Each structure stands twice: as structure tokens, then as C-alpha cells.
Image (cartoon, rainbow, N blue to C red):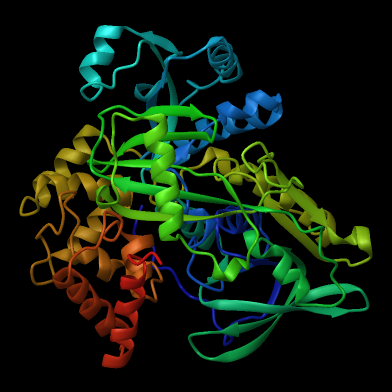
Length: 534
């Protein structure tokens, strides 16, 4: 599969669509793919960068939702397990089987994992049989002592399997690329400011192009509000659209620390659950699950939230003795819960919610909220079924579950060996990293790197290279420096990359986007801000 150059839609192109999607997170991205692949003329608008908010605030797991069994949400768990299998099929380079240890399990946990295995009866109906996932098993104490850090081995543990997504940002991008390949139009940094409404029917939206600084009227036969934590704000933009009852949002943060273990551990405490996951030779710890009542636009990870989480971690796993200086990076986001709740966000349902505003007399508008990253593809199918009813246009017979996402497939051993041989001037870890993250677009990226000074030189322990920044701008619609560091590459995720690398990447991106020195300085400052926690 050849490399795709993502094209940003502008006002000079058609402004008439079957479906307008507002919101470029994982829900919007999967819906754009579903809609375009079924033959609908589709436009997706995102006010910031694609997948920059809640969709970037994940624990890297594609999972069935083991804890949802406590509330007997069997349908949600079953759907999640099915989607876990589908995502590992259609994006095998990004979604991989991953073992998890549950230390000192009680009877409830043992019964829960038995049910988990039963509900995932089809987990090994895979395109690649080498990725089979075994049933839950008991780990011997001696094995635990060998795997766990000194003094931390539990008395017993069960090992079960879920999947890890090594880069949710690139998986969201893969859905967008697939949508574009199917004919969708997309635009980031394009803010939908209000709905176009006439005689109680939504006919589109007024958007502001932040790059070209212009207002645009867009017409669509149906509009989907998929703005995550901002769904209520979007509905308030027009007086005719009613706003659902306010719901408490859940704040989830994650910490990246020095490496603590070679195994992934799941801890369940009075404060909820969190895991220690080995990731890029570091440990990813999270999530928190606490209510947030403030303005969505003002939310950010704070120093206090980091300190509070460290206390919880050290109480549940005293052997780690984590200090603030051990935290190399922290990130998070707000979960838009669909269940009305007060303070117990941990036990609130993660079901998705589809709201047709025809119920209050406004046609042509659907709000899609809540849900899980794992089940987003299935949720998109449910939304599109309703879109078909609203638009009345026949849809093509196309199943997104039966096709690789754009650029996503497992490389065979021979393909991997050929790539290593053809690009032998690159470090082996660079080839391996690029194959995992770029799939069948790896050769295009490496070829681009050959045209750059120092193009083959690794910039971190993973082997990432400067060409990824150039590729992000030329091929993947990156328009800001933080787009490059946090959503097209992994250069910013393990703590501050250092001034030398930050300035090198800023020069590459700035030259491509023709930034002035003032603009370049502002972009650098935006990245720097990600490492400050007030």
C-alpha cells in the first residue's frame, strides 16, 4: 500500500455534504471512515488537531472492560471483547496481544476472569494465527519472584490477556487516512461555531478556519456532534438545540516514570484501579478516575493531581516508593460520561450514547457521546445506521471489520528482512520502530529520510528520526509543533526532548509551513507548556 498524503479541506472546495461530523477524536474518525466507505459524501471538522483531547488520554490498552463485569454490563464487555479482536485484525502493527498480571486475586476476581474468558470465546478467530491469546492462567510464586522488583512479589497472581495499542494517536490517524482513502474530506484547526438551523432543522454549520482566518457556511443533510467533553458547549451555540442534563465529567491522568517492572500489573484499591504497564522502556501508570466540575476548556493536568496520584500509588504498591522526580511526563483528559452521576465517576457506565434531537423537535442533528476508545468502531456503525434513516440515501455494503486500516498490516519476516537490508544505513531499532508505527508506509518514510541531512541518525532510544517530523507535515496534516511531538511521533512522550532536538524539529516544521521567527517561538512555547504543571 502506497503512502497517503492527507489533504486538508478548505472553503475553495465543495461545501455540500451528506454528513458533517463535528469532532476529530476517535468517534469522529471512525464515523468518517464508516460513512465514506459506505458511499456518503462526508466532511469531518476538528477545532484543534485530530485526536488531541480525550482520544489522546488513554492507557494504551484495547480491552474488554474487566471491571464492567462488577455492574453486570455483559453486553458492553462482550462488545468490547469483539472489537478488541477486530482492531487487532485490522491494525495488527498497532494493536498487539498483551499479558496482564492481577496480583493476589480473590474469589470475585477469579470468577470475573473466568467470565472474561467465556465472553471472549472468539478471541482467536484471527487473521494472523501467531497472535493467539491464551486463557487466564495461574502464575507460580517462583516465577513471580523472578519477574517482580525486589520485595514486591505477590503471594499469587493470575495472568490474563488484553491488547495494547502502542500509539492510540496513530491508530486514530489510521482511521482518518482510511476515511480519506474512501473519499472523505477532513480539516483540523477548523472550529464549528454554530449550527445552521431553519424551520427546526439543522442544515449544516458555520465554521471558522483558524489557518486562513475565514468564516465558512457548510451545508449537510445530517450533522453529528461528536465533540466529546464539548458536546454541551456545541449544543449551546444555537438557541434551538436543547442541552442534556449536565453530567459530571471524569478526569483521568497517567504518569510516565522510570521502568519499574517487566510485567504489566493491575492494582485494585479503594480508590479504583490502575496499572503499571511497561512502555518504551519506561512504566506507564494510570488512570485516575475523579470527578471534574469546571470549565472543559480550562482543564489541564495539575501538580496537585500528580501529587495526589503518587500518594494513591505508593499506598497501593509501597515497594515502588515513587517520588515526584521519578515522573518524567504526565498527561490526561476528560471522559464524557453518559450516565448521570454525582461523585462516583469510577462506577459510572462507559456505555456510548446516541441522541437524536428529533425527540425535541430538531431534525437533522445527532449527538454522540461517551463510550470507550475500544468500541469506537462499533459505535460508529450504530451512529451511521441512524444517519441513513435521517438522510434516506442508500448506503454501500462495506464492512470496516473486514479490511486493514490504511497503512496497517503485519509485516512478514521476509518483508522486515528486506527493509533492514534495503535501508541498511539505518539503525535496526529505527527500522523496527518505523515498521510498528507506520506499517506499509515505512519505506516511504525511510526514503524521505535519505534526502535529509542526518536523516538516518536516531534521536532517542527507540530509534526515532527527524524524518518523522517532515513526514508529519508533508503527508499527515501536522500544522503545529505539538502535533508533531505528541500526535504524529513519540518524540515528546518521555519527558522534555531537550532543547537541541526541540529546535531542530521546529526548524524543519517551520521551514515547511513558512513560519516567521515569532511563529516558531510561539510553537516552541506551546510544546514547552506541556511539561509545566501548575
